[in-house]
Length: 135
Image (tube, rainbow, N blue to C red; front, side, top):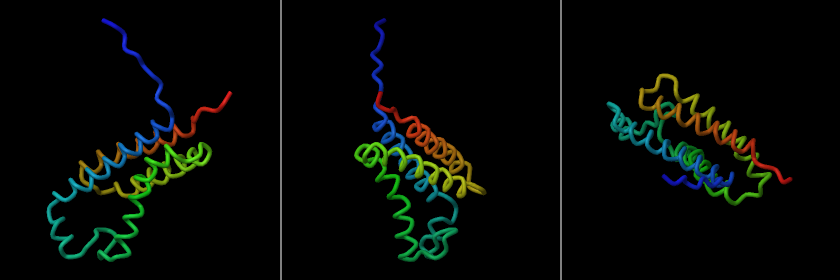
């Protein structure tokens, strides 16, 4: 059997892939959460879980929080290397911390995705930290 070519994936592409994978896990976690008993009724009643009443401010805040990882897919590819490295490190730590704060008391599916999300966030930090330098 012929050996397969194994091309090294550039760091920018790896980072964009990590942020993309993270976003898919976020979306699936939120989607599966809709199947929780009483969740849809809470939404109809205007409750945003632990954040309290669903207000325009809460929705804007959560939208901004979720926009950052989505923007980092592009940012990882387009930002100057130095800025990209540090934004990936800082935001990777921040989003790992956010997940760790939201996991206590969560259902098993959310904990499963949460562990994956923390690992993806930390892989982003490690990948950015090891950003190759010019010779």
